[in-house]
Figure 1: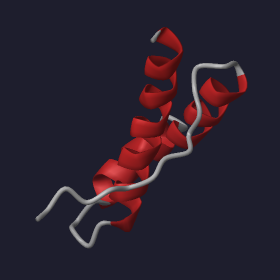
Figure 2: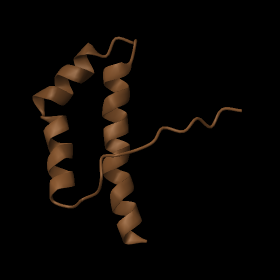
Figure 3: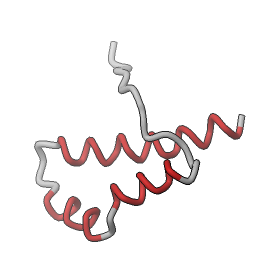
Length: 63
């Protein structure tokens, strides 16, 4: 079970970053903050050291 949990954390973070970049809302300040903290590189490094995969599949739960 621990292995599955590890994989979900990095994938969830990647999905959040992707949604911020794809947003039509005013996310410029959030993107600037993420980039100033190297958010994408942090996720890449987490995957490299085995914290989980950044791969995910978005599934709609709307009826």
